[in-house]
Each structure stands twice: as C-alpha cells, then as structure tokens.
Length: 211
Image (tube, rainbow, N blue to C red; front, side, top):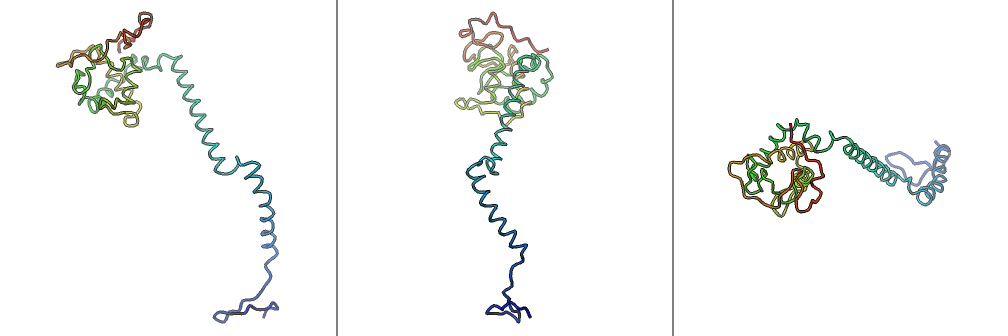
C-alpha cells in the first residue's frame, strides 16, 4: 500500500492515490510555461511576420513575384527574338493542322467552315470590328465579345490551341469564301491595323504570309 493518502473514492476495487507527479513531467510543464512568456511577445508582437500564416503568405508573395519576373523575362526575350513573337511563330508555321482542328470544333458554327462568316463576321476580307493584328485577334479570342455573343476562350482552350486558332483565323484573310458575309467594321492594312487610325502604317513592317 502506498504511503500517500488515498482519494475519497474508489472504483471497482481500485483506489486512487494522491501521488506526486514525476519530476521530469513537472520540469517539462514549467519549461513550457516559461517558454510561453518569451514566445508570445516575440512572435505576436515583436516579429509577427514569422507566424506560420504570415510566413506562408510571405512565401506565396515571393513565388508570385518570381513568377511575374519570369513572365517579364519571357516577354522581353520575345521582343528581342522574332521567332518567339506571334508574328514570328505565325511565319514559322507548324500550327496549321491544330489551328484548323480547333477552328472547326469551336469557331465554324459562327464564322463558317471557310471563314466567310455567319453569326460572326467574315474572316476572309480586310474589314475588322476590333482590329485585325495578330495581337488583336488573340485578345478577342481570349477575352471574347460578350455584347456580340462571343464567349471568352481563355481558360477553355489550352494556350497552344488558342494561339494555333488565332494563326489559322489570320491565314483565312484573303481566302475566297463560298458565301461571304458583307464587310463589318473598318478596313485594315496588311498588318491588320486600322487605316484611319494608323498614319505611320507605311513605315511599319508588314506581317509576312505563312509559309
């Protein structure tokens, strides 16, 4: 029988004794209390940025900054390397089969199989509503024209599919459509820029035709 007094109750023949807690357990207990006196002011008042949620947010901000820097570097590289620009990739080719497949699957219903237009405008003439440069076409396909019933394809099409269909639509310009829709919008030059708003269009290099 333990020398420590028993509690006032027992259960199923088992007596509860008022034993002292182990010294190692008490040591850990008091150390954690002392640690809290330093932890709380240090992390919650002096260095809140080191708290887990704040550290996570800072790490995510760092990743986003690195991603933005990487994209900026890619854009800068594209400016310095013609083969990486839309015009350079258009001329390089290799997108024709994929571009036609994406066009026939997603665009034919509104623009006709030969690009002559239907619900959507004619893609074979020199008249555009929102601009006819490769950048304009990509912007329109990405963002859509909700007022005209065209959905935004960014997020629906994969980036390579989106670029390929933009190139294919550009290649339709100048083709002969079986039943072309009447011109809509304003006439553009060889680069797809509006003639009325581009006074220096003659000094701009023309976009070569795809080979």
